[in-house]
Image (cartoon, rainbow, N blue to C red; front, side, top):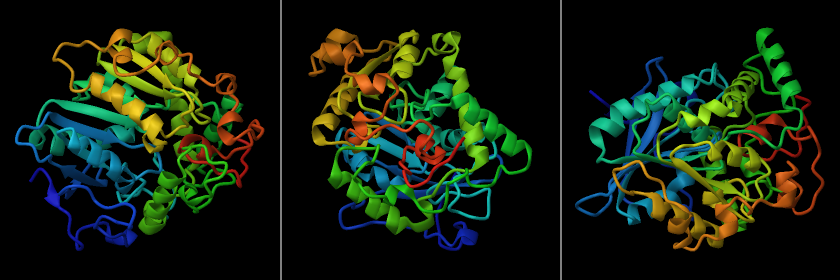
Length: 397
């Protein structure tokens, strides 16, 4: 059977995690979802969900690829907006987070043995849900870590999307100031058998539940609070810091994006939406990467922090304007030019990449933190790579 309905007797009993959607008063479930389970080729159970729009002829299917430490419930608002646009939706929890299976006994650890394991996850969704069951054409909407995985899949030409939209993809980091030293130290710890340990300074507490003040994710206190409530409600599904193995894999994975020949080989029509005040992922590096895409474009939304889809309405409206100009698009591999995007209200500064906050362009996250000083190497690696701030933890990776 391609996939099965999730039941309480079959869902990850060793983690003692509920199989139902975890709702809170401010985060209702949109539409009429179908909660399903798929198993990857290496035996990991993934929690996935599908939605069909009310329209008789869907415009296609959007597959939402989350960032690190995220979970399905966090994207209920986005799912509802996609349904309103006439799209079917598929999304899922990556292994090691949300209510998907784990490769370590402690479900709070954000662990993956190797970054290539995430390919197994996306292939399982592709083969067991997206291709056989969801209406075509298929599109990708990815964030941060999910964006990096999707771009790599496009490079390797096995991704089933007609077009890809990704927000603040994990191309490079501006939050870690000494990347080479961090990478060496992480590799050293993993080689000496410490891959399953939390990164130094990291722990079980979900960084999604930290105070709004000083956060690196969004300037919208309402959405931030809603997501914090969802993280509290989902319990171990809102994981804490990553393991040494995860950060070692992430740093090694990102090195490929620095190769000037890499982006040139990506032929999938791609729209990258970067944040002008992103203190997590390096917007200038993202722009350099996008400039080499043969069928891609980057726009920068000034004032946006890392999680554009969780931002203030004025920022999200700009994102959706760009999305609507690009998806579903036409069957030919053409991305919108500056004129097309300008017609939906995006400025010349955004289209030329001049919407980057000067401090962020210097790899300084002070502007996004409300003027606080950026401390080189002072944020824990989880805060750097899982799109969350852990200002209370210090790691010298």
